Image 1 (cartoon, helix red, strand yellow):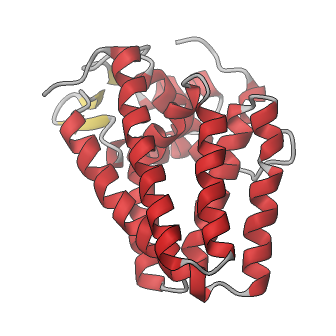
Image 2: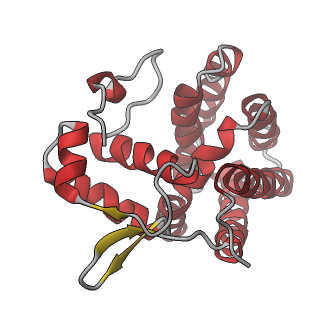
Length: 234
């Protein structure tokens, strides 16, 4: 494994920041989803720490995130290995995510304060710059902020906890689909439909737009992973 460039951890363009652990998890997930880290490959904590020039703590935490997403597995006497991705499991997780986010969007349409609505709209408009310049990393950070604002805006703590737990499992796949041609612009338009429905207080419209958005994301993620790795199993 080659040494990682320290600039990997830098953020530019005013996009929301991510932690070093999440940056590391994102880098490893991208390599798995592109097939650079093949199924069955053992991932050694010390080697990864040396490669990315970090301590073993963020490596261990990053591998935990990947395990939650089903990208790696802990095997007795072998340690952490790259897993084979199941399309059925991916579909099931996205189906649950779509319903949870639809519910949050429905609630947010009536529960959001004026300040929260303004913040959602402003962040959404700001993300256009990342789309226009094809900056996937920046748009992905704005995407996380977009969904986080809706989770908070639904003002239901239990639902928000469920959303955050499920999102953590799907994060690598949601990020990977932005590599598809035209996906950034399409995602922005899908977000726009959700935002407009929330701003006009249309709960059912917001739920419908968000469900449609997550359905598209699910298909795009499966398409990207299948095309890159050819490792899906029935």
